[in-house]
Image 1 (cartoon, rainbow, N blue to C red):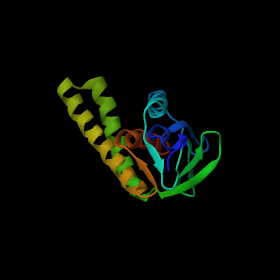
Image 2: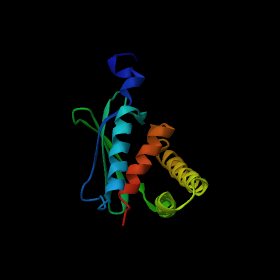
Image 3: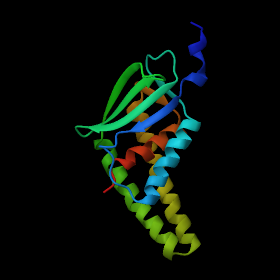
Length: 162
């Protein structure tokens, strides 16, 4: 089937929102990371919900009854569907990721460049692992690429700040 909605360029997120009630209060640096992740996500992403023949899409992320909810709509508001993911597979990786982030920010203030680089590499590896879990958990529901997964993982982490 061919038509104007079949373009791979349409299989992308053009608008994203986060449920303010689900979000944890964030310090300024984390709030900045969240905004950068949203900006980068809108600029470049691959997002193809199973069964959706055309996009582009709006995505609203929230936490409902300890589940991550991807509320997907076409640009303009027409409902495409929702994907609910258990947060359990993400809990340990997010906890470890936050511990590495704290170490990284401490290292920036106090450590030698080699130590900063080591902690940053570990932090990035943990972020990649979380992104890979997201890709696996969304498999058969929403196809995303690695960069999209990384940015979405950053946003998922914003729901878990203490």
